[in-house]
Image 1 (cartoon, rainbow, N blue to C red):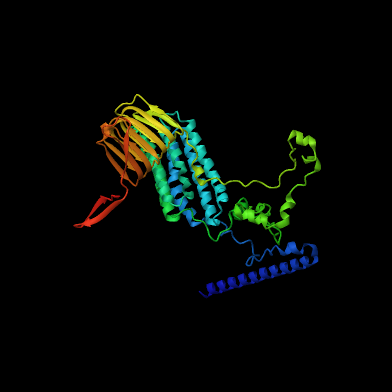
Image 2: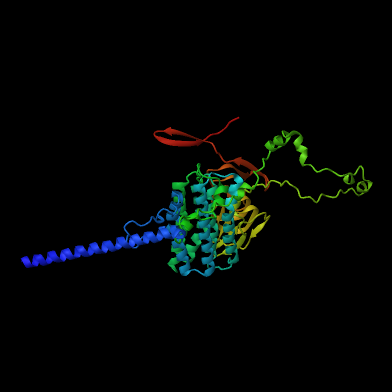
Length: 520
């Protein structure tokens, strides 16, 4: 046992001595290297940047790891990505590619691009102060151009009867991004959803029991608008929210083309110490541009307050250009215009944000049992003839138009029209008028029901055979009904106003409402 312990002791002693010898060699090597370094004065900086080979416990400090270079999106943009883009739009695009023709896939891709443009606007709003109207209109120009491209895609393939409703639904849903211009954005998104349901209902009807993917496509499209409304209610309930402590839009736009964060994310090659400082950023272009000129009365008073300097910008008229001193000019009555360019520019009138909607192409066609009259403007007499009792006439988005329906139809609907008149013989079920200001309706035959909803100003003319009609109004004003005068010839009417003021009292625990009548 003692022999074994003695052997182990001897082995440990040998190892310690070997380590001492190795440490001595390392010290000698380090001393020799330091002496050589002192002799090489021209390479002192380069040698100092490389640590000795035998000492790795304390390396020179390197560039810190790029941990915080990735920018954090604002909460509103992160929510938009999670709720709308990743939550609904990506799945909708993939579903469209699974079964739709290429022209519909292209239109849906344009729709997704418009939503991405909306995301860029949300990024700008999260980083910038609220701009003036002119700058805001410039920010909306990409959205307007995207919506117009979607509308042109619908017109280009409008003859595809099996997919026209899909194309129309996308074209009607694209203006949903216009909520950024509205004080009540959630209500605006709801209105857009109601307008596209006119076409999605047709898709559901045409492919009922045939291909369930079309119904799934409709649910996905409506789901985008539902999630858009939810996002708006949570992040922008009273309009697009801007950053009150942010930078001006002009500065944000000038700095956005230089992506500093992506450049910092990539590790640079080992530079010679010390690293050179980054080059200064280029001066913003906005510094060169003059400040916007005042307009209106303020500009007039500002010019008057300049005193004698007002006339400094006027060009001196040469004697050869004076008509009272030059008979030749007085005979021709023409003074040559100056070739010098004008130093002042006329102010540009800002466009209205509602121009975002764009002008839609008109439509007048019979599809199935429905007459579609859409986006007609300034048409004095659109005649719908040869109708049948099972057909429905849908009038949508018309302006300054008169529609004449010859014969008896099942129903007539009018939605989102302005100054539109409808002349119909007879209706079997009802006439529905919604959000159509300054309308006119004349029934020469019979109709059991007339429903008017959310409409200001309208005229209803009844025939003698239509005096038993029931007229229902809700959220309406200035609705007048003209009834024929008994004993007079045809065409003589007496105008009566639909009551607008109601009185409600509590009787026996119940509300009792009556019309307020004015006497005198």
